[in-house]
Image 1: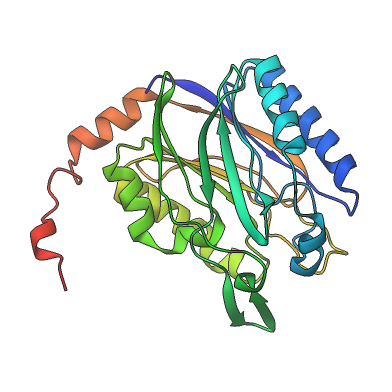
Image 2: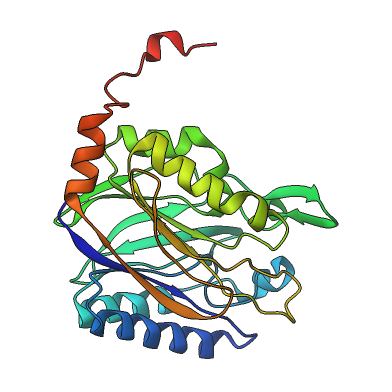
Amino acid sequence: METIKSAICQNAPTLKKKTNITHAVSLIAEAARNGAQLVCLPEIFYYHYDLLALRQQADTDTTVREQLQQIAATCGIYLCTGSMAVKEGTTIRNTSYLIDPSGEILIVYSKIHPFDVTFGGLRVRESAVFTPGNKIKVVDTPIGKLGIIICYDVRFPELARVCALKGAEILLVPAAFNTISGPAHWHVLLRARAIENQMFIIAASQARVQNASYIAYGHSMMVDPWGRILAEAGENEEIIYAELKQHVLTDTRKQMPLLEQRKPELYQI
């Protein structure tokens, strides 16, 4: 990879999908004007994270994706689209795209682990709406090797490790952690995935929307391979920036060659 400037657009979506998309595009353009070469949006960036509503809001065509391809090409940036509810026939997937500076799609990733949990008065069943994905892809680009996972996926270390073994240097994590699990686990999980896999983590959250049925945690952040937090948002809408420096990745992997020292033959059950 090369040293690059990255940005996260932590937006606060309303219940007006088209307005949210237009606003997200304006945030992407602002980040690009400020020198960002890689920009990431949050999970379900264009609506409240309301599963019942997302059945109705799911994209049945490529209009939204094409708008994001256009802004990526116009600005000449790499863009992780966050994620969108994408309907194909009777199937809805929670899907993220990585788009290159020409507007071409490099990665299509659908969330593999549905968020099916009950804790702290919160009950969520993503599997009632979303069909899980089953493909993991890492792509080699001029700015580095990139992979994508989505939100709850970060709790499964095998997934991030597979990305690392496929060569990922930067892991994009569109997310919508909540205000119960976020304070307890968000920082710990992201730093752990960065440290154990010696990669940069770019984790984009929705901002907090207090009248939403599901309140996102905020605190989008970027973490380096040593586990240092390079940039962190607060609770409200904002754009954060950080430089991902090649020598940090190279030095970390050279000084502590974890991936080379693995003993996979002993890890079988």
